[in-house]
Structures are given as structure tokens and as C-alpha cells.
Length: 510
Image (cartoon, rainbow, N blue to C red; front, side, top):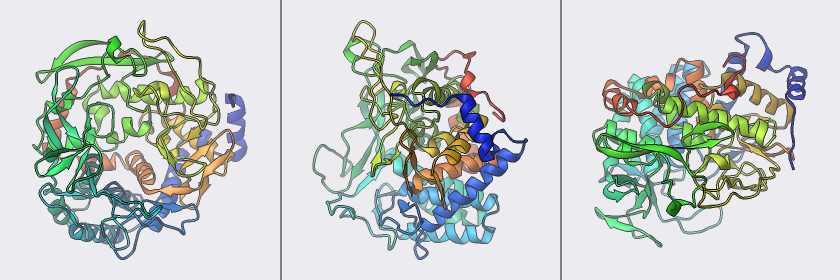
């Protein structure tokens, strides 16, 4: 079943609502600024005044906070405060006081001394490590994630660049964080590359699979995919001289195209090459005429969150510059035309029916079981050449749109983003006192009326870059980082045509 909202009808709804999406130049930025101000309100409501630690989530009425937080959440609050200051929502003093309190608490938190890394879950009320999950009473084995610590470290770099008065406090924490601790030079890929970062480690023996090394227990998995969020940890490690530069090329653009690997989403097309002495298969997928390098789940978060900090499309125009635009175009194409939802933006977020779920464009992720874009979990199966026949065409149902995913697309499709968000706000009960609620099932109209600090922080970061001249990126990048990362990633060409036509990105203000 498809719920198709024709463009003419959609435009009529926007006009009736008085949306800024089709109004005079400049009004789009005023609308985006208003969204940012409300989004910041949710971050303030989530933050414990005594510790400066932000909760993982809060109810839609901004009254009931969760009793757990993560390094990512903590980092997201600090970069959001930088944005709020720059956009004039809070004074420089308030921003400094807020971030300073968070840094003081971070400096006291239990963490792994040898690596300088932080545990995945703390109680924001007192900073204690969570060992019993508050929602169900289950045992938590304290874990130290390479990705979560990556986002915290990224935020500490933003603080160093944006708040000079706190540079010393931020650096005191950041300088102890060694991403080389996660790096395993013995981890290999099917293409013969060796050297990957682990998903994380426990400093006490956990149940299930683990690999003991350097006095801790590492995950059995390593991050081996290029278009996914762990690349922020790789960038940080290389930028700090903790991980060898070639590690960037050790991850895979796609899995192999041979029948032995026919379980992944579709058979890629590509060519063999090498960079930094590493063999690289420049594989790509194609969906509805759009060629791109896929993420694991086909979601916006994996593809575009690192781009909030690293100006990938400028530093690597022949790889990320092409892929980010193609990724956004594919998400728009899916939501508006293929699935016919009338709205777009798909990424892991709240489930409108309760809890949390992964959302994405199944066709754009390597996981053949994919991240679905609808409640019904409709499955896309293109087959795998002669190795696996295609499955039946999907029958998309109640599509779940996640606002943060659309905001991440701002650098590549500003007009379509503004229009999409205006229609979501006008046509659903999708907006509350803290900005856009976390997810909307656009067929049934069911809304996940809560706010997740990570998703709100992504919105704040994207709006900070858009409205304040790349604020987050410029605060994050310093000379040494640029010297080490820019030439490294700038030499690559993805298997994406330079002149690929992407009409989905066209629109007023794009």
C-alpha cells in the first residue's frame, strides 16, 4: 500500500499553512533559526543543572528525563551550546558556564585510565557508571565504544576551537584519549588490507564473544565499512598520529562483487585500485538511476554525521563530494517517488509505536535485511546478478520519517529540506516545545513524542553549520588535522560519475 502525496497537493498544503518553504529569500534562514531555538530548549530541559550532563532522552512535554547518558550525548550537548551561543540564544558567559560545568564533571568521571576512554553509560544525576539498566533492571557490563568516544572527542575539539577560555580544560581530557588503543593491525578485510578499529572493549570480562588484548576484552567485530559513522574515530586517530594513515583505506567501499558475497544487498560495480599502498575496490551501488557508495543500513546518520565536523565534500570532491549528494538524492527519491510517502529523511530514531528502531532506505545499505523505511519493514531485494535472483517488488506502507536525517542534508539540498520540514510541521502533530519530535509515521500520523539528545544535537550541529558559516567544522578543524586528513582523503575517486544528474536536489535555496 502506498500513500502518495502529489507535489501539487503538497505545495497547496504548504501555502495554506503559511510555510516559509516558498516564501521570500531570507525567510528560510529565519525559519531554520526558529527551529534551532526550540531544539536548544529541549537540550536545556534534558540537562542536569548540578552535573552539566545531558540525559539520553526526554518526554515530548520536556518533563520526564531518562536516567542514563552516553559520551555521544555529552558531546552533543557541548557542541549544541556552542551553536546556541553563536545564534544568540544564550550569552557567551552562559555558554562558557554550561560547557565548563560539563567539562568539570567529565574530568571526574570513572573511565579507562590507560586509553583515556569513557564508558558508554553514566547516570546524568551524579555521573556514576550505569551497571543496572534503569528501564528493565538488566545487568550492564560497562563498555567503552570507539564510536561514542569519537563523538565526545569531536566535541572536545569543537570546544577547543570555539571557546578559548575552556581550551585547557577540554584539552586535558582530549589529550588522554588514544584512539590507537582501538586499532588492531592484525584485523583483515577480504581485499587483503590489514588494520581496523574495533567496535570497543570491556575492562572486565563480559559474557559472549570477546578478544583479550592489552589487558582488556575487545569486541569480536571490527569496523570495516567506509561509509559509516566510525570513520570519525579513524579521522581522529590519524589526525592525532595515533593510527597509521593507511587505515583510512583499509575499510571497504563495498563488499566484494563475487558470488561468495551474494548475501549483501546488490552486486556492486567498480574497479580495483590502490591508495597509500592499500588495495582498494572502488565499488558502488545503483538505485533508481543514482550511483553511490552505500552505508551499512542505508541511513543518513552513517553517511553524513561525520560531515558535520570534517568538510569532506570540499576536501575530497571526487569521493565524498559526489557521494554525499548522491546519498541525499537517493533518500529524497525514495521518500517522494519510489515509496511515495510524500516526505523523506530516514535514519535510526524512535519508533512511533514505542521504543527505538533502525530506519533507512533498504536499497541504499549493504545489509540485505536492511534498515526499513516503514513500519511494515518492507524489503527491497535487487538480487545479485547471476548469483541471486531478485525478490518481489516491495509494497511500502507506513513510512517513518526522522527529522534529524533531513537536517543533515542541509548542505546538499537546502530548499528541499526546508520544504520537507515545513510540510511535516504543517500536516502532522510533529512539532512540540523542543522542536520536531523524534519520528513521524507519515501514513498513520503516529508520532514519537519524545526527544533524543543525540538526534537533537545532530539538528543543532547541522543548523550551526548552515546558519553560522560552518561553525562546527571551523571549530573542529585545526592546521595539523587538515594537513594530515585533507591530502589523505582528497586523492580518492569513488565509482560515481562526476556529472551524475541529481534532479532531486533542485529547489529554491538549494
